[in-house]
Length: 114
Ligand code: AMP
Image 1: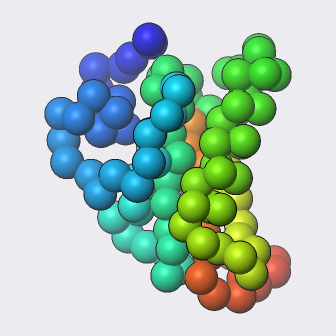
Image 2: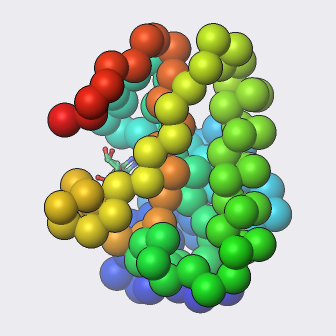
């Protein structure tokens, strides 16, 4: 397991700081966003620290993260649909530099995003 000692999501993964856990499985942890932007707003975080999507060489490893996000959305009961968001870098609006998938649902989403 790779880890960055200064990373807040690594600390949540290690259960060193509290979070509202929704699910965990092989290689990931899912918990509720502290500042929800939809009735359901879950963050799916891989256990291994990689800053963003550009740091993945292994397509299968990255694919497993998305499969896990889809499973969590299903368990959350988001039957009407949902949105997966992966903010990347400063222009992408990323504030926590440990790859995470936002799972947003429970309301109709707008397009374009802000
Ligand atoms: P991003 O801007 O895409 O990097 O998303 C980071 C997300 O992490 C934001 O939606 C924050 O509200 C959320 N967040 C930051 N700290 C915590 C925390 N301790 N527990 C849960 N969510 C957090």
